Length: 488
Image (cartoon, rainbow, N blue to C red; front, side, top):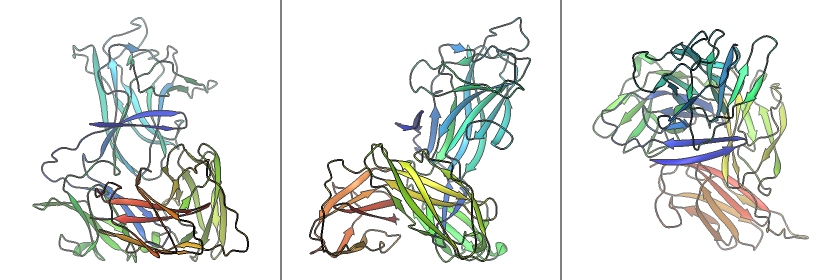
């Protein structure tokens, strides 16, 4: 079992990546989350039961004591926000409740049912609530605490922040006592009331227990499984022998599809001995957003912990106006951007402001078209510039520095880039995985080397796993970023 801590804004959340171990009999994969890729194709991200499971929160062990979050008799919520990187598949919500009645002379006790909710964002209302259920403890349980857990089973394509919400209704003012975590991780939690005349939001001083379990396709190795996307233009003709339009192995659970026809597909998982299939799902070329992005991949070039800006040119190449809203990673501090409508044949220029982190990382921006089109996910590779970099001033020299798109893409063992540069200075070449971790770096002379090839290994010569990789080419104060998919 391994852990990682992610700090984004004010949130400090501990993630425990749960080892998959022996998966046993093959289970049915979940149907995918589908994005437009901004180039006329589709990106499919799917999930396999139990694979890449992550538990976020602080309810990893039974509590030694509990605490009442609020003593007032009103309709109130205990809110705990979590930062996530979509797409994810939320499995369950959980907490510990103590087996004691703190105020027996008041109505309600620790066995009174409470409402559990998952909300998209921060404050609960009819527009943000995405799941709700009720939970109650077993009054015959002799233990000093009980763990409550409810399955959610919900794919999330657009949310970058979700919050768990435990709701107590009037008449149950102070029950129950929630388990208190006496050590890290320390979560930000709030009491929120929507009662008339009391729209209060106050921080909770105690570290009350709450947990969120989800499947994250960026997780650990898949244990020898491989996945295929089988396609047919007609649902009745879709079988286990239908044509394969995409496949992958390892931990990516992701394919890019170009030249899409309308039809039906299903995800097949195999371990070399047997197979299993997801439910059949439709997709259609009419739902691919007819937007062309320039640049389609964005990158930063400012010192760490400072603010940068980049521009996105979006051209509507379709026949109808395209209307959408924005969802953004918390690294984008100047938000929200206004809703946007682009008429047919016109180009919209949008300036995006963001904060460059201390270390290289991937940030995402999602365009949401509702049910009319698949959402578009744009990826930012944020790489802070070294503050000791010195800008070289050139006079009367051509300013040409170009890197081709990767070929082939996807690639199986090696990927190549064509380099065009009129300068003698060396080019620094770095490779990052989808978590923003640098896996390879090197330098080359563009005067002597016109083709640069990466063989899918780190600096120690160890092969890296399947997945999406970013390639950063830097020459003095110029930087070009490319993206490719490694499939093994």
